[in-house]
Length: 89
Image 1: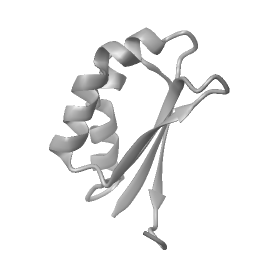
Image 2 (image 1 turned 180 degrees about the vertical axis):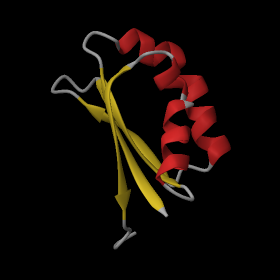
Image 3 (image 1 turned 135 degrees about the vertical axis):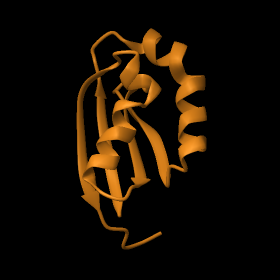
Image 4 (image 1 turned 90 degrees about the vertical axis):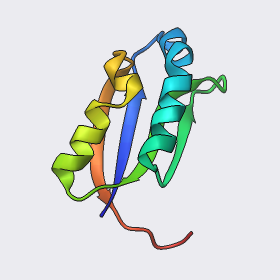
């Protein structure tokens, strides 16, 4: 089952994001994220993340999100996990 992991960064935490980005990208590759990319603020700076993952169930998706390097670094102000259905792409 696919899940969208929608994350919003804490204000003024771009440095935390940049410092942990290599570990984040490695985690995405190692865990087989289906698609991923940052949200951008009006200035074009990264301010959140959208990651679509395949997981057995919601508990597995929550476990994935809890072990994500940005989450472990305390970057996120909020995280929403929603079942997602691919229609196009």
